[in-house]
Each structure stands twice: as structure tokens, then as C-alpha cells.
Image (cartoon, rainbow, N blue to C red; front, side, top):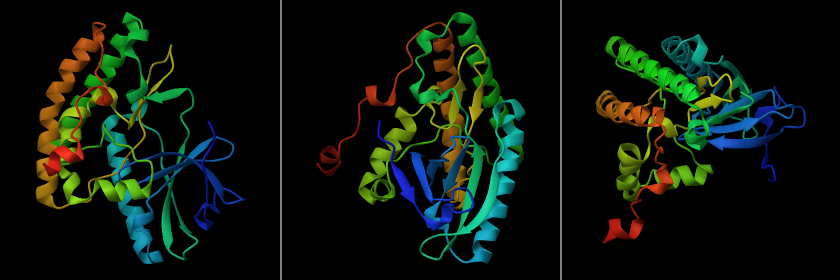
Length: 254
């Protein structure tokens, strides 16, 4: 596969030639990997601004990350470091630097049937513990880490998905297609370790009402995830998002 390289002055603190390989993208974030494959660099282009704005943003992001890492536990988290850098358009951006978790794959790509019974038991126990810790954290803070995640191929795709006519499709994806065992934000390290690791520590940047609805639905969906974990532990096939019916734009317009 040909690497997709991106260049920007914002990468100067971590890369001399200013070129980094894009390896993923989320709801707001572009994810790059350094040339030596030791670190990932996360960047939210839309949050750039003045130095004061970027500094305030970095402090808020760091505080949330520290809380979420403590919630999940040291064995399931990785450190995040925050830098301010000026990009090619002269806006100050927040760079999030994390160690690259080698020999690991997103749960979305895991074929659980290739794991033996002991490995499935280990994964199931970790996911149940993560659910318990997230629910406990919510009771105390009315927030919780995003253990699901979503992907995007580009900023243009993210903008398109935010269009009003895409709302039914996004709701279908959130309510039906995404589940904990097909998470993009949780990685599973290779056997024999089989450790589940959270790599995204973003918080929800919406109104209090939006967060209440969002987390209420998330808490309810954990019951579905518990059933899927039970089935996975017994060797049943875990459904993939692309194997479930999708809402097509022409159906929405009809």
C-alpha cells in the first residue's frame, strides 16, 4: 500500500522535512505517524487560532485526557503529550503526541474467531471492566471516554457527513452499526498479551443537552455490547458495520 504523505509547517516540532504519513482520521481529528514509526501525531485543524486560544484548548484537552486515562486505568491507556505549533496558514494548532502502539489492531479489524478460548475470555473481561469503569465515571462526572470512535478519509468527508441530510445515516450508524467489539478507538495487542488499549481521549464539544442525550443512549447501548461480548466469548461471529443494512441517500430523499 502506498503511504499518503502530508506536509505542513505544523509538523516542525516532530519532523524535520515536515512530511508525515496519514494513517487514520476521526470525527474531528487527522492522525499521522512519524517517519521512525515511534509516535502518532493527532491534529484538529478546525480548532486552530491564536496562541492564547490554542493554549486554552490544549489545557482543556490535557485535563480531559488525564481524567479519561485514570477512568480506564493504566493498563488500558497510553500517555498523551501536547504541543503548540504554527501551521502553514499561520494559525497556532495543538499537536497531540502519543506513542505508536505497534503489533496492535483496532477492534474493528479483529477476527475474534481466530482467538482461542483463553484469549477471548481475556478480551471479554477487559471490555466488561472498561464498561464498568466508564459507567462509574459517568455517575461522578456526567462524562465518559469515547470507547467507540468513527473514521473518516478526509476533512471533506467529515464536512459532508455533518450535512443535515446525513443526520439519519449518522443516527443509524451510532445506534445500530457501531458496537464496542467493532471499536475504532480501542486497540487489541497481539497474542499472547491480548491487551485492550484506548487511544482516543477527546471529550464531547457540544451543549449540555446534547451531551445528556448522547451519554444516555451510550449507556443504554452498553447492554447490547454486553450481549455481544457474551456471544464473542462463546465463539460466535461478531457483526461488522459493513455487514449490516445501510441507509442510502436516495431512501432518505424519497
